[in-house]
Amino acid sequence: MTDIPGAMWRDPHPLVLASGSATRKALLASAGLACIMHPADIEEREIEVQARADGADPAAVALRLSEAKAEAVAAEYPQSITIGADQILALDDAILHKPADMRALHEQIARLSGRSHQLHAGVSLWRGRQRLAGFTDAASLTMRDLTPREIDAYCALAGADALTSVGGYKLEGAGIHLFSRVDGAHSTILGLPLLPLLAALRDAGCLTL
Image 1 (cartoon, one colour):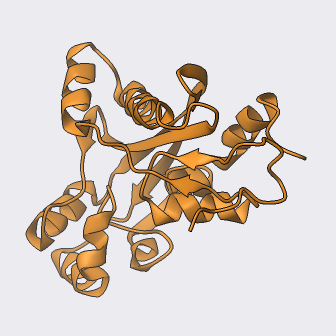
Image 2 (image 1 turned 180 degrees about the vertical axis):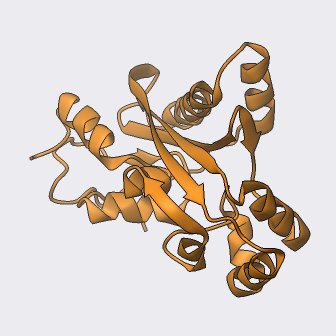
């Protein structure tokens, strides 16, 4: 069933999210915005590799990926606003990805232990073939200096669900135990910075408030 945009939405055409992320959909819903979910069929790693070869930093990689997603899906909804979003985890200048399995999860948490890393969220808005806006926002997270026993305990507690997150953790779950400091908007940490996104939608004349 197609979602109805909601009372906050004044545009005559439905809002489209170029993603299959239930978390991003829930963030939009928390702001009173329903959407059509349409995951983008793009080669993310190829785009990332090319962006890095072009000299892009992690924030620019996140933005390029968000633009590729929005552009790909917006062509199928020429009259709608389409949101593309992506998130990059940067440890210094290295980009880390979702752990492939439980062993990789253990290794990634050990690598992040005792250090600060950044989550860069990129967002792009398109209407049909026209790019309306693009921006990034970042959060900085400092992980506690964890012992091997604590890492084992976390991996057992978080389980396979942690493999669905770029950092191998979810702050809204067991991952909160890993950190000593978190700086940044919660929606940015979840991969869709709401305040700049809502500002861009207002600029596009799409919101009632």
